[in-house]
Image: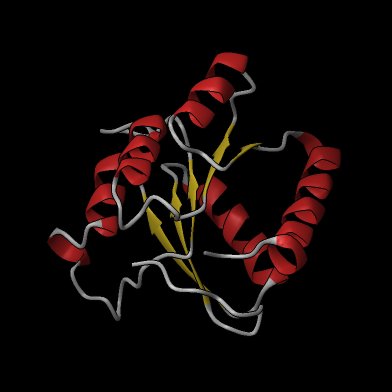
Length: 151
């Protein structure tokens, strides 16, 4: 299910699992500014995320809903929370190598620990205030464009 992305010129497919439209639009704008060749897909709850990843229901069309190279996953989402979704991803042989980045407002050490225990590869706190927003944008672009390698 996971394909290798040879370089940043290849189109990268990203699944964003986020129930807040403003948070999604913010992340989408950052990703598009960092890498023009990005295909971004958005689902708003944990059940939709699992359906997307396993091609169930409305997500069966591979052309419309390509396999993601990367998942941004909020912890506090409806139906199945992000920790449950991360655990499902890491337990499935076809998905376990899928890079999963938790992106949330929580800075709770318990949430961080549970995220990593459930298979998250990274844990990012959503920015608050203009200074944090600028730092976040720079970090995502650096990570996105020059550091991140995909399985």
